[in-house]
Length: 77
Ligand SMILES: [Zn+2]
Ligand SMILES: [Zn+2]
Image (cartoon, rainbow, N blue to C red):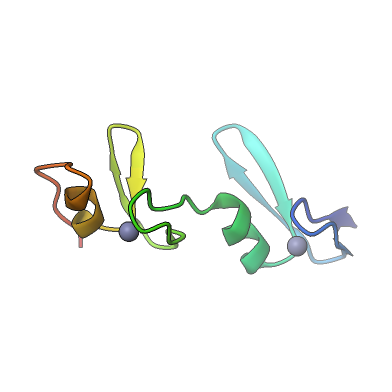
């Protein structure tokens, strides 16, 4: 029995996500996405897919990266 770190729900089927040396505990994927998904710095959407990282900034896609002046970025699809 563990407790979701996002909503505080104590639930028998929680799961752990190990990221960058830290263990996170969630009760459902929507809580995990809420906690883990980076936010696009241009359109503020939560990045559920791969996204684009440029110079430490996260974008949902090459379009948003280019809109913020990041040149030379193409979608890795
Ligand atoms: Zn939760
Ligand atoms: Zn975006």
